[in-house]
Image (cartoon, rainbow, N blue to C red; front, side, top):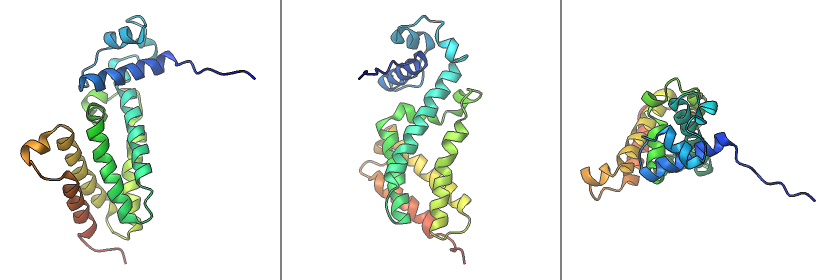
Length: 193
């Protein structure tokens, strides 16, 4: 029997080191030279896999969006539609709190535009999943409801992950705020007939 050993590709190593640097520093301001140095490659080597700095950041963001989608999928296995939405929304906020730099990068379209990764293909399914849950609950205008729900939960995720929630509203449980947002999206307006 032959044992197989996984050898990390240079591209994967550059991405892993980029994620590590970003999460250690808590900032999306990571440089290619430092990534290359920590990855043990020449400072020009990243250009072979990522023609621009934005391309590397976009690949890192795409990996983060994939991780977020997995967290939401796992949380969203509740049997009832409303419970799935609740679990997914809390998983979204929890991801932002656990990985604030990654979460911030994933939505920095000013840094990621023209990055080479198809971020819409990675991020759009999250929104589509939410619309489908609302549709399964029988709501009309699921595009608007999903947009309202996503922007509200995203706002909580941003202010909670940066610590601003504790400054602005100390003692307010972010989970209750998320529940209020979901209640609003799920109670307002008519159901489909």
